[in-house]
Length: 261
Image 1 (tube, rainbow, N blue to C red):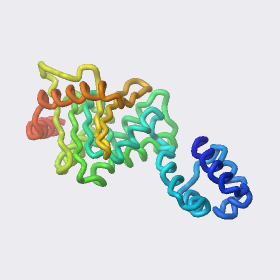
Image 2 (cartoon, one colour; image 1 turned 90 degrees about the vertical axis):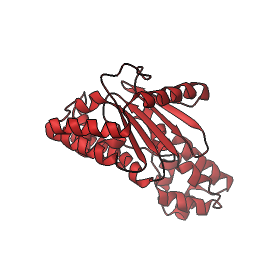
Image 3 (cartoon, rainbow, N blue to C red; image 1 turned 120 degrees about the horizontal axis):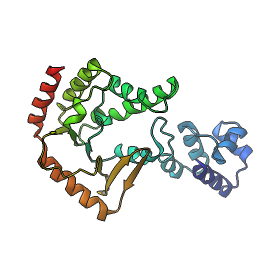
Image 4 (tube, one colour; image 1 turned 30 degrees about the horizontal axis):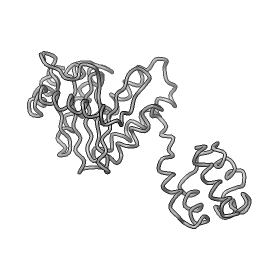
């Protein structure tokens, strides 16, 4: 926000427009303009559009604004990955802790956040759930993007939130796996080979062809852009997919788990 604000101020001063004059042009108070320029206030789209018109409509502010998002409910270390998810041309996820966020049902997501330590307030809980559901919309909003998931069987055996929540979660996952752009593989607990024993992994390809990886642990996450690191992780994922159950076998297993509840 400070960087964006300094950018606005620099463009304004380059045009030799005072803050008072600029405030009238963008139809915001001088105090609001000052707060945005000093990085204390998040600008909205209306401000950006009017500021563009006042500053020669170069498109620079619109482009910069794309990278300015608080993303409430998302962990600070996850925000850059979440931003890249929105424009990815392919996305692959391996998860061994919980159901991947993009496949979670609302009651299941709520149960996860209710288990947070220290506990979340009601407002914090709702913010987290809203952010999770907004991310989940990617599957339907981007039908031409292939989403690949490999999930450990153990994840589906857990009863986070209770039996009814687990049933609903399995129904939701099975419905999601029916989408043409979604492929789901389950990694069985009795596997003898496992290429991703070092933990969860996510991979994506951007619209410019660049590839990224993401790994996460307790209260931290790491976005990996160095191709020398990304390529071995992609190889691990590809190998793991060959070791997991096929989508058809995975569906049969999940239906069997669902029926036993």
